[in-house]
Length: 100
Image 1 (tube, rainbow, N blue to C red):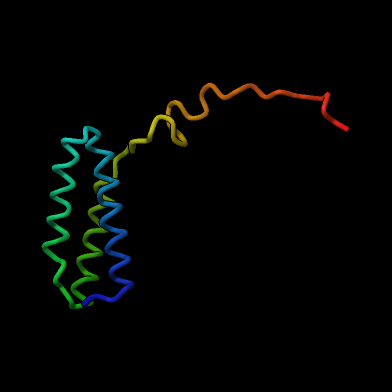
Image 2 (cartoon, rainbow, N blue to C red):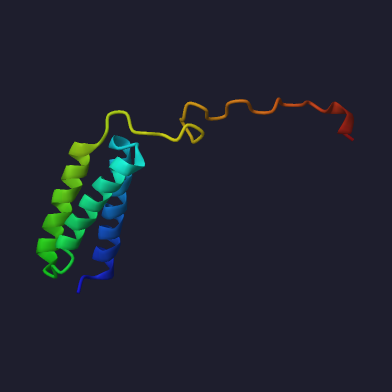
């Protein structure tokens, strides 16, 4: 059985792998296939208990994530740094009549 620290590290790695794949596959049907491939890779190694072997696999996966990083990651249009971020904000109203 893996330690709690390894489990958290692997869960983070899995989540980051899925998130990174969204940078490359914006269409959900295509992304879903990639997500299933990622899950299969993680499931293939889930019974490994040797800490050194687990760490080697984690390091390999971290390296793959770095190499696979998208040069222009996808951002939600209305999210921070998105194309519609803070677009059409209500005007700032200077209401000087309510000052005491």
